Length: 389
Image (cartoon, rainbow, N blue to C red; front, top):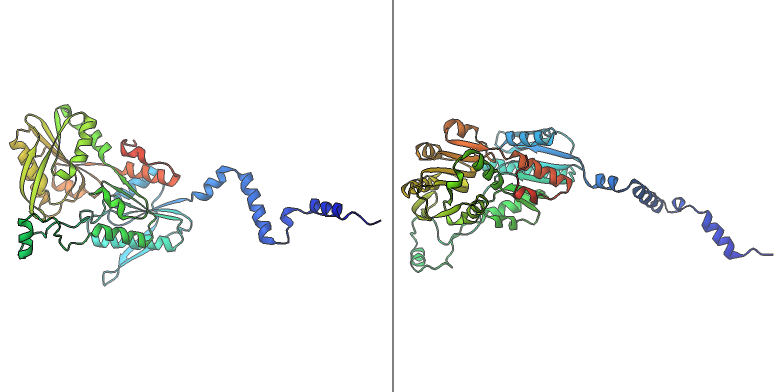
């Protein structure tokens, strides 16, 4: 009697183990699937979230150290040097394979050298098989070169430029570069996967990137400083030194529940202010000038004089990025400020020694929390309105 072929096939199928497949690749994939199911969600999270490494460039090592201190980790080993022809050389001193890498480099000091150093560090980590490379740039370089001007700066020697200015021809554009877009392209090409910065000069710079950009705000730290250090802050008025900062000023004024004013300025050429018109009543009030950055400080010093002429009792200046180049320190020393408050997105120790009016707000906790939340895959929007003490 011949055995039933159907029953034989069913018995053979029952006896065959899935992992004993004739195809070894298929067998390994089945084993991996079974192990992942047994491991549960925790192991899956660990497989997607590699270890963290934070490296510092040479522009602001103090801020980088403060960030890692708050994270409870050590700074990564990196050696930066220059060859005799001033080329930058960067050597990453530890393995970054599969790591979540953060590189802290601010746009201050020797900006071009520091930018090149950042690009080389990003590329070095990327080609060393880092899982993700995030550039932490507290002060974004070339942020002021974010658009073409209507007319060329300085005196218009070109007859066409004079005619355009006379006829208010806004279509006549200069040949100025949009350098902020160029920097964005360079960072992306170098291999950056993510950017963390603070108070971009123009928020639309985020749109220059095809990678995620987290633009943090110093506003929560500024509000905290005002409430803790200006006793009569309820009798204050928040003032923007130019029309472009009106949105920033109104946001702070709304949260303090005080009034705001703005100053309209006209420039003859870069770093020179021609005239200022105050819009708002500052008489018998404490004026608090708020801006995203100050370079040569011509604008805020002229604004402070204008506010005192209009009857302000005291004048404070609060700035996110205190660049303070050229005659800035001497101008502040001779101005009528009670205090000029800046954050440490740019090193301020030397400026504070030279000018006792300068005070510094530490924002390292905001960058540390942004790094922690990014590493853990959490939202950073909490930092837009809160200080993570």
